[in-house]
Length: 479
Image 1 (cartoon, one colour):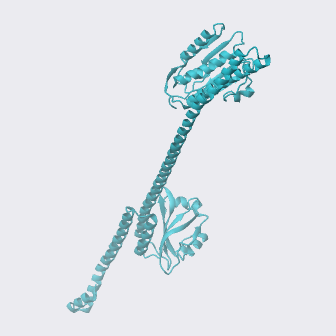
Image 2 (image 1 turned 90 degrees about the horizontal axis):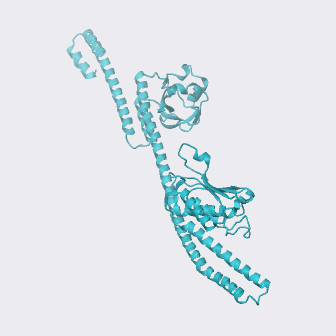
């Protein structure tokens, strides 16, 4: 009630006692209204603060800005001495942390510069705060707090505090701390509920920050992956360019071998033969033997050149995958061998319906090399046997056989497994040319063809007990 209004009422009321009673009656009526107005204003201010927090959450602001603005508004509204956001260190089990944001009265020191350790918080209190516990202490010296807790609060001049958890989803991220430092303070339920609502909205900000961090990390991972892909593509393009250059050099080399080396060899072989035929009587036995050796050496060198060219063509040739009947190829090869050497009687065992994906021309070369070797190394075997098949333990599986293992087996002279590592190297031989002819290129060619198909090849054998060569091809899924 204003003094001017009281003066007017005094003029109207002649009886002083009646005026006093009237004044008391009006005061009793007005004071509750004034209190309600004050409460309504406080509620309005708090709702405005909540609205501001929510608005900031919808704006592209960083977490530090949201925390700082909120701390300033809450301290002003609650007339507190300090408002701060405390964060636990991720690996500390809620026993260690620091203030990451605060607004503090100039009469009191900042809490930002201190690292805080409370060895019993994680074991005794963290689980309760994670479930939403709020601590409202009117006076830290009369609240039954532990000495260590009082000591931590006293270093920040705290006399009363209001602590609300900051939850990131279900995880206790930190605490929203309201400190009264000048004197004890009795916290009102409306104040506690207001601070709880502020903490809930800050929890939304924490959750958004977590999602944003994950999104940014995912973006960085994708960018790095894209960069790796670009680097790989550049490396692949460079490798393709280098491979084209190598292929060009191989083509040049092949042309050189075909034309520049063959001509001298033909001359050496031709003149050696001419000497043997035209000067036979003038040459002694040693001279004739030397010429025969020269001719044999030039012929072996010619065969080696042919093998190198074949190997080069296998490496460089384009592949065309299709369904290949390996059994039919094997039967045709065996028929050709028998027709070329009718004097030999060899037992052939061919697995029926061996069909796979690959380049028919190259797979034909694989089988020809295997069967030619088997034919050659069974030449001195009385009852020769050559078999083409699929390993029984693989073929017997009811499920689709992703890696059928084929084999070509013979009962010829075999080889010593000590030297198995030499079998697939160019020009490596385990038998002398005088025993078994050949240029040592066949198995090297086989290995490269099988590798180009995504498979592998290996061999087993024993001296006098024959040899078995195994190979696999890539599956349709791998292709």
